[in-house]
Length: 141
View 1 (cartoon, one colour):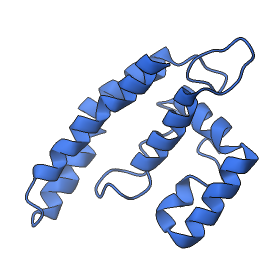
View 2 (tube, helix red, strand yellow):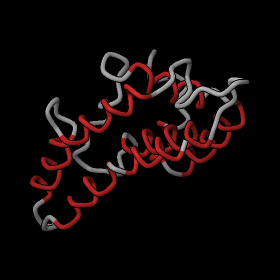
View 3 (cartoon, helix red, strand yellow):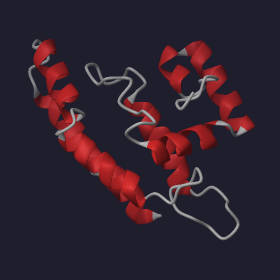
């Protein structure tokens, strides 16, 4: 579980590096972020490694009882955060079932928990950034 969360955290410094780009050069900053998720981008390479290690069945790691773990919560939050619009220039459609079927399944499964859906539905009413977290049309749809 910890290793999978750490794998997601490998993306953070890649994104954080885009903050040092001159704020006045919005196009350069957005291009740098988009490049991370191009087919040969550093973000894509990390995501594909995470995808390959996921257990499937809507879980990051398999558990004897099929329960969600903190790694599933982390995947749900982090992957939606990346597509929430917070990161200008990051393509909101980077997370797709064709490239990342296991990760999409995790986002869909965790996002289907009624309490999670209710929480983010209310949050989305106050801040549109949370709309992807509360999506009723799930990622794989």
